Length: 212
Image (cartoon, rainbow, N blue to C red; front, side, top):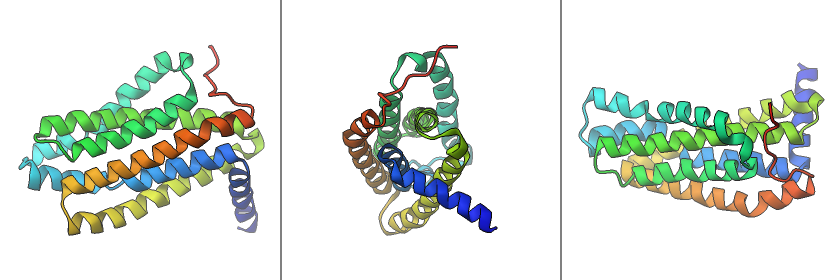
Protein backbone atom coordinates (compact mmCIF):
# COMPACT_ATOMS: atom_id res chain seq x y z
CA UNK A 1 0.00 0.00 0.00
CA UNK A 2 2.85 2.34 0.85
CA UNK A 3 4.49 1.63 -2.49
CA UNK A 4 1.22 2.27 -4.34
CA UNK A 5 0.75 5.58 -2.54
CA UNK A 6 4.36 6.54 -3.23
CA UNK A 7 3.92 5.82 -6.93
CA UNK A 8 0.68 7.79 -7.04
CA UNK A 9 2.40 10.65 -5.26
CA UNK A 10 5.21 10.57 -7.80
CA UNK A 11 2.68 10.88 -10.59
CA UNK A 12 0.93 13.81 -8.92
CA UNK A 13 4.23 15.55 -8.24
CA UNK A 14 5.36 15.22 -11.85
CA UNK A 15 2.00 16.39 -13.18
CA UNK A 16 2.13 19.46 -10.92
CA UNK A 17 5.79 20.21 -11.65
CA UNK A 18 5.38 20.45 -15.45
CA UNK A 19 3.36 23.59 -16.32
CA UNK A 20 1.83 22.20 -19.52
CA UNK A 21 0.65 19.06 -17.71
CA UNK A 22 -0.71 21.13 -14.86
CA UNK A 23 -2.71 23.31 -17.25
CA UNK A 24 -4.12 20.30 -19.12
CA UNK A 25 -5.10 18.55 -15.89
CA UNK A 26 -6.63 21.61 -14.22
CA UNK A 27 -8.37 22.65 -17.44
CA UNK A 28 -9.85 19.20 -18.01
CA UNK A 29 -11.03 18.98 -14.40
CA UNK A 30 -12.50 22.50 -14.52
CA UNK A 31 -14.47 21.72 -17.67
CA UNK A 32 -15.78 18.48 -16.15
CA UNK A 33 -16.56 20.24 -12.88
CA UNK A 34 -18.59 22.82 -14.79
CA UNK A 35 -20.37 20.49 -17.20
CA UNK A 36 -20.73 17.17 -15.40
CA UNK A 37 -24.12 18.20 -14.06
CA UNK A 38 -25.72 17.58 -17.45
CA UNK A 39 -25.97 13.88 -16.59
CA UNK A 40 -28.66 14.70 -14.04
CA UNK A 41 -30.03 17.92 -15.52
CA UNK A 42 -30.95 16.35 -18.89
CA UNK A 43 -33.73 14.26 -17.40
CA UNK A 44 -35.18 17.25 -15.59
CA UNK A 45 -34.96 19.35 -18.73
CA UNK A 46 -36.65 16.68 -20.83
CA UNK A 47 -39.43 15.98 -18.35
CA UNK A 48 -40.21 19.37 -16.83
CA UNK A 49 -39.25 21.86 -19.54
CA UNK A 50 -39.63 20.00 -22.83
CA UNK A 51 -42.49 17.78 -21.60
CA UNK A 52 -40.92 14.70 -23.17
CA UNK A 53 -41.98 11.14 -22.50
CA UNK A 54 -39.79 8.33 -21.23
CA UNK A 55 -38.66 7.25 -24.71
CA UNK A 56 -37.70 10.76 -25.80
CA UNK A 57 -35.86 11.32 -22.51
CA UNK A 58 -33.87 8.11 -22.99
CA UNK A 59 -33.05 9.13 -26.54
CA UNK A 60 -31.80 12.49 -25.30
CA UNK A 61 -29.51 10.79 -22.78
CA UNK A 62 -27.93 8.83 -25.63
CA UNK A 63 -27.13 11.91 -27.71
CA UNK A 64 -23.67 12.43 -26.20
CA UNK A 65 -22.82 8.82 -27.01
CA UNK A 66 -23.73 9.41 -30.65
CA UNK A 67 -21.48 12.46 -30.69
CA UNK A 68 -18.63 10.47 -29.14
CA UNK A 69 -18.84 7.77 -31.79
CA UNK A 70 -18.92 10.29 -34.62
CA UNK A 71 -16.16 12.34 -32.99
CA UNK A 72 -13.79 9.41 -32.61
CA UNK A 73 -14.43 8.37 -36.21
CA UNK A 74 -13.74 11.88 -37.51
CA UNK A 75 -10.61 12.26 -35.42
CA UNK A 76 -9.29 8.88 -36.55
CA UNK A 77 -9.46 10.13 -40.12
CA UNK A 78 -8.45 13.76 -39.79
CA UNK A 79 -6.57 14.34 -36.53
CA UNK A 80 -3.14 13.68 -38.07
CA UNK A 81 -3.38 16.98 -39.95
CA UNK A 82 -4.46 19.02 -36.95
CA UNK A 83 -2.78 20.47 -33.87
CA UNK A 84 -3.58 18.52 -30.71
CA UNK A 85 -3.45 21.78 -28.78
CA UNK A 86 -6.16 23.27 -30.97
CA UNK A 87 -8.23 20.08 -30.81
CA UNK A 88 -8.04 20.07 -27.01
CA UNK A 89 -9.07 23.70 -26.62
CA UNK A 90 -11.81 23.42 -29.24
CA UNK A 91 -13.02 20.25 -27.52
CA UNK A 92 -13.26 22.04 -24.18
CA UNK A 93 -15.16 24.90 -25.81
CA UNK A 94 -17.55 22.77 -27.89
CA UNK A 95 -18.46 20.53 -24.96
CA UNK A 96 -19.27 23.66 -22.95
CA UNK A 97 -21.16 25.45 -25.74
CA UNK A 98 -23.24 22.31 -26.23
CA UNK A 99 -24.45 22.54 -22.65
CA UNK A 100 -24.94 26.30 -22.69
CA UNK A 101 -27.13 26.14 -25.80
CA UNK A 102 -28.99 23.09 -24.48
CA UNK A 103 -30.29 25.41 -21.79
CA UNK A 104 -31.93 27.45 -24.56
CA UNK A 105 -33.39 24.46 -26.43
CA UNK A 106 -37.12 24.61 -27.17
CA UNK A 107 -37.61 21.02 -28.33
CA UNK A 108 -36.20 17.56 -27.68
CA UNK A 109 -34.80 17.38 -31.22
CA UNK A 110 -32.86 20.61 -30.70
CA UNK A 111 -31.51 19.42 -27.34
CA UNK A 112 -30.55 16.09 -28.95
CA UNK A 113 -28.59 17.87 -31.69
CA UNK A 114 -26.80 20.10 -29.19
CA UNK A 115 -25.89 17.20 -26.91
CA UNK A 116 -24.59 15.32 -29.94
CA UNK A 117 -22.34 18.29 -30.65
CA UNK A 118 -21.25 18.19 -27.02
CA UNK A 119 -20.24 14.55 -27.56
CA UNK A 120 -18.01 15.65 -30.45
CA UNK A 121 -16.27 18.02 -28.06
CA UNK A 122 -15.75 15.32 -25.44
CA UNK A 123 -14.19 13.03 -28.06
CA UNK A 124 -11.80 15.83 -29.01
CA UNK A 125 -10.89 16.41 -25.36
CA UNK A 126 -10.14 12.73 -24.86
CA UNK A 127 -8.02 12.22 -27.97
CA UNK A 128 -6.04 15.44 -27.63
CA UNK A 129 -5.32 15.15 -23.91
CA UNK A 130 -4.21 11.53 -24.30
CA UNK A 131 -1.89 12.43 -27.17
CA UNK A 132 -0.37 15.44 -25.41
CA UNK A 133 0.22 13.51 -22.20
CA UNK A 134 2.11 10.83 -24.10
CA UNK A 135 4.39 13.55 -25.50
CA UNK A 136 4.96 15.24 -22.15
CA UNK A 137 5.36 12.34 -19.72
CA UNK A 138 8.29 9.86 -19.58
CA UNK A 139 7.24 6.27 -20.25
CA UNK A 140 8.00 5.13 -16.71
CA UNK A 141 5.57 7.71 -15.27
CA UNK A 142 2.89 7.55 -17.92
CA UNK A 143 0.59 5.14 -16.10
CA UNK A 144 0.88 7.07 -12.84
CA UNK A 145 0.08 10.38 -14.48
CA UNK A 146 -2.87 8.95 -16.43
CA UNK A 147 -4.21 7.27 -13.30
CA UNK A 148 -4.03 10.44 -11.26
CA UNK A 149 -5.53 12.57 -14.03
CA UNK A 150 -8.56 10.35 -14.50
CA UNK A 151 -9.01 9.97 -10.75
CA UNK A 152 -9.08 13.76 -10.48
CA UNK A 153 -11.57 13.94 -13.36
CA UNK A 154 -13.78 11.46 -11.54
CA UNK A 155 -13.67 13.58 -8.39
CA UNK A 156 -14.53 16.68 -10.43
CA UNK A 157 -17.52 14.88 -11.94
CA UNK A 158 -18.74 13.80 -8.50
CA UNK A 159 -18.47 17.34 -7.15
CA UNK A 160 -20.32 18.58 -10.24
CA UNK A 161 -23.18 16.17 -9.55
CA UNK A 162 -23.51 17.44 -5.99
CA UNK A 163 -23.06 21.15 -6.67
CA UNK A 164 -25.03 21.04 -9.89
CA UNK A 165 -27.82 19.20 -8.14
CA UNK A 166 -28.05 21.98 -5.58
CA UNK A 167 -28.14 24.59 -8.37
CA UNK A 168 -30.72 22.56 -10.27
CA UNK A 169 -32.92 22.29 -7.19
CA UNK A 170 -32.62 26.03 -6.47
CA UNK A 171 -33.20 27.27 -10.02
CA UNK A 172 -34.19 25.38 -13.17
CA UNK A 173 -32.72 22.97 -15.70
CA UNK A 174 -32.29 25.62 -18.45
CA UNK A 175 -30.45 28.00 -16.12
CA UNK A 176 -28.30 25.15 -14.80
CA UNK A 177 -27.22 24.30 -18.35
CA UNK A 178 -26.45 27.94 -19.18
CA UNK A 179 -24.40 28.40 -16.00
CA UNK A 180 -22.55 25.11 -16.53
CA UNK A 181 -21.74 25.88 -20.14
CA UNK A 182 -20.68 29.42 -19.34
CA UNK A 183 -18.33 28.25 -16.60
CA UNK A 184 -16.87 25.66 -18.96
CA UNK A 185 -16.25 28.34 -21.58
CA UNK A 186 -14.36 30.44 -19.04
CA UNK A 187 -12.16 27.44 -18.23
CA UNK A 188 -11.63 26.84 -21.96
CA UNK A 189 -10.54 30.44 -22.44
CA UNK A 190 -8.02 30.22 -19.60
CA UNK A 191 -6.53 27.07 -21.15
CA UNK A 192 -6.41 28.74 -24.58
CA UNK A 193 -4.46 31.66 -23.12
CA UNK A 194 -1.95 29.61 -21.14
CA UNK A 195 -1.42 26.17 -22.70
CA UNK A 196 0.22 27.04 -26.06
CA UNK A 197 3.03 28.98 -24.38
CA UNK A 198 3.57 26.21 -21.81
CA UNK A 199 3.78 23.58 -24.56
CA UNK A 200 6.34 25.63 -26.47
CA UNK A 201 8.47 25.84 -23.33
CA UNK A 202 8.16 22.08 -22.96
CA UNK A 203 9.25 21.59 -26.57
CA UNK A 204 5.83 20.43 -27.79
CA UNK A 205 4.32 22.72 -30.42
CA UNK A 206 0.72 21.55 -30.65
CA UNK A 207 1.94 18.06 -31.52
CA UNK A 208 0.30 16.24 -34.41
CA UNK A 209 -0.19 12.52 -34.49
CA UNK A 210 2.64 10.66 -36.23
CA UNK A 211 1.91 9.15 -39.66
CA UNK A 212 1.06 5.47 -39.80
